[in-house]
Image (cartoon, rainbow, N blue to C red):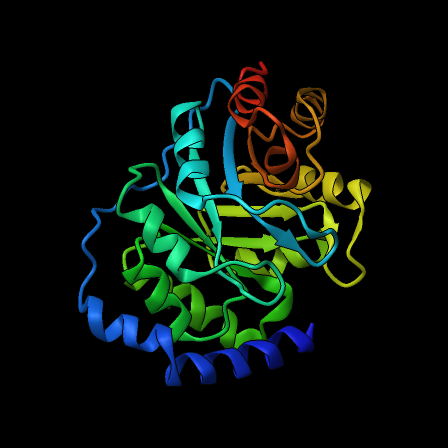
Length: 254
């Protein structure tokens, strides 16, 4: 995972010299009201993702990001995830800003976060939640990033993949832990590890399942096996010819 850290160090250096640091200077302050995530307990909650590319799939689909977010907002999304990483996901903080000024749903900034600059950008562009990946952060970075997100008034979403990560992240006393079914080291799907991890998470945290959702049947299966009822769905909803109908189908699992 060190390649992500090196990539982000280079990227932040570029941002300081180019567009996104100018964005901080221009915005001055956050204009969007906070929309804290509130997930229902008696059904399924879908965090729908604006995701045009990924390391495992390459290009997925080029879309008007605001139109895609409006489809999500109008068809039952509990929240909307926006990729801001450019190199690996063809994302942008500009996309987050564009969606943030128009959409009132809670927004998750999905990024390889290492630095306070990234958290500041997420805040100024309208994020309500910020993803932080346990596996790519050392102990000091993990606590610093978590506290920095909280101090900006946003909600950290702590991502793990395997059960051996649980003890470490519980030291943060997180409200939300996201279990990624994809092993970020290999980019391979590992549902067995993900399901085991979801089952071992304590009731003190709200669980989110990410990656590998291809149907309402998969959501039903994971829900029955682990009790999880919050799902982040990206690739399959982006690939759908009718994302609104597909989203409603996923959200109507009981």
